[in-house]
Length: 238
Image 1: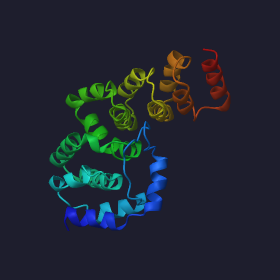
Image 2: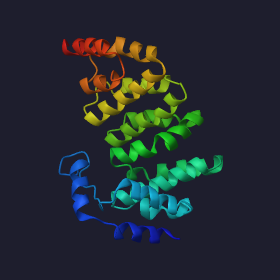
Image 3: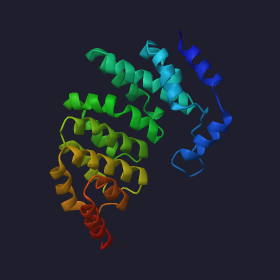
Image 4: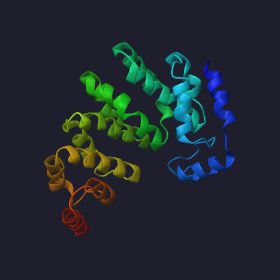
């Protein structure tokens, strides 16, 4: 099986009606966050099945997927990279990391980032402290998707009970203007709080009154109802 075979299978599964729905859902219109993204109209479980079928494609052959104008082709290619990473040894993980870095433009919507980044880029940066400087570059990028990549990469740290890096990244975006960043940072704070509530409460003590409302709402989702009410009331007074 070759990469071109996979591309042909994907194109044969195109569903124009589903594609139109996905274009609306992922906000691909002029001025929207997903402007210009194109969809074939293939559901994610089908893409996962194809990625599994073609999981043995060499990483060196995936460029036509990762550089495709079609969202589904990029996601399928990214799923194959993720599979290589999770099954591979250290040398393979390094190759996967470099493959993703060299195809950063493949990450042009939130679903691609959320599905792929924590278990690949995030895991690699957790394991390799000398590469973590990239997080600061990404979180300060003008590109929305790079800032979201940084935040989702930090989920790998949270899962290991390490909160310093995620909290620092969340602090960096306290004044970000993008709703997708408010949601991602609030999500990371919530995940940290599920593992260590004091970490979350200490962060809220410092920032609840001024952090973006959506960020706060996501962060406190798992707290007790009265706690949630108190924090939202505190935010409303500012």
